[in-house]
Length: 235
Image 1 (cartoon, one colour):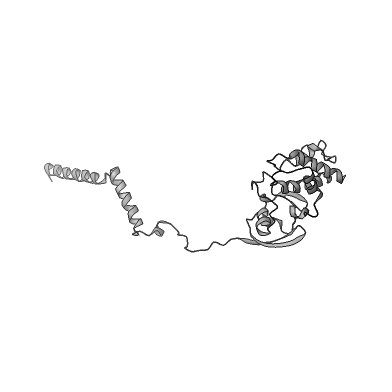
Image 2: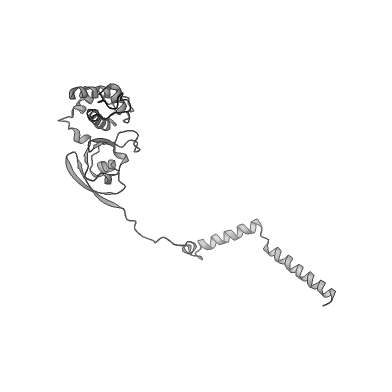
């Protein structure tokens, strides 16, 4: 092969490479066109959607709801219910047992409207699951007293006007009853001056212990007066 033929072959190879490079050049407009064609192809059913994922979820498959039977002693009566394991004690009382005296306020444990007494201790029923209290003894506002036979704390709330709108009152009353039991049992609080001495039902002591129960109407002083009267009657 002479020099002139090599030169011709080299020119041909260069021309071919330039043509290949021109074919590889994709403008932004062409790229968008190609993307649109791909979406239209998938939407038209040419490419099955399921083939684009590793595993397609089964169609029409029913999701089982985890449920459990719970037995509770509520207001002196044994109650057995079947609930979703995610059901709070508050919703179990209200929705399953229809004890609507216990109120749902913030549903985040910040207002105290849902306070009930469980195994002698007051708790926010919105923060605990029903399945966590298998066999527990629960007292709600309905179990403290009846209109014909009021609990002393209920009667004191009425006497001292310890409520206005009344929405927080069931939680306030349940909490107040438990607070006096805590003081009587010698359980100290953050304001107890001597952790080894028996606390006294002072105004400061009771206000501190009741601080988790919010009253938007501002009946705090009347609530404290009602509690002071009941505490005096228990002495």
